[in-house]
Length: 333
Ligand code: T6T
Image 1: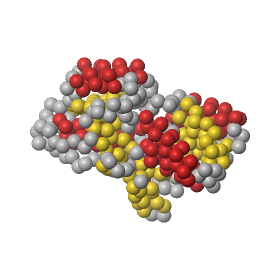
Image 2: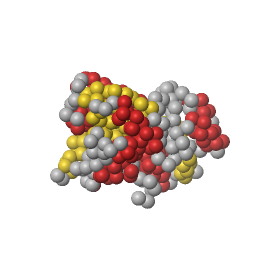
Image 3: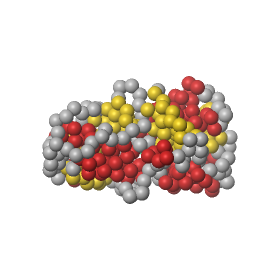
């Protein structure tokens, strides 16, 4: 693991950089202007879930970078994390022949056919965030190192619970590639370094805050000795505080959440959550557009990029260094 530690005044920000095999970047590769080759080109973003601050922020990065290059930009995607909805989105995008598409597939298998059709139609495709089982699809894959993020979540949890006790993991499902890698990292790090932290359950709660909130109540009654909860993405993280509050356990159970949407940051600040492992969705959007433009203009393409992660606590959440790891709900904020 390659770990950069950046000083941020009184506190430090841990930025977890890329593992070997891929390049790492903390933002745009520095595009501005173009040599005329992008004239008439268009890029479309297909989000995994359009209202999710993670994807809104990714869209903002892709949009800003497209503007820099002078490429026409549009965004679409499904409202829910849903295979049929995303298949329909891809099919509609295929019919209007954009020059490039960046897409986060909601399922590693079911989206392969539709994305191959899109590619076969002449559109360059960048796979962002989640991945497909067939890694030959797309010109590039750009995401956080989710395995490393899960390991970091385990280290953080172990620190919060003094390396002992029972914990549970809440995840939207067991098919999403990103959350699965985080859980794998969390499990393997605990097994290797903190054998006294025991995982009681890895529970699928659906991609809603409500699902996570009611799962917390169930887990607390099933495991009275629970000391910690790891939530694998934004929605699960948004629900955990409500679940703990409803059970009168807020502040008593340690919580580490992946992502940093506004509601998660508010939960961190209020004490309902103790740490966030956050991604750089804006940078993912920028990088994807840069690689699509490179491909469309006959320049070399980087086939695999891992963007930075940050470890956020109440101590560093207001630091300017952390700002790019906090997600937006609109591109103006
Ligand atoms: O954690 C992100 C994303 O990386 C994941 O693939 C799905 O969930 C999020 O969008 C957050 O809700």
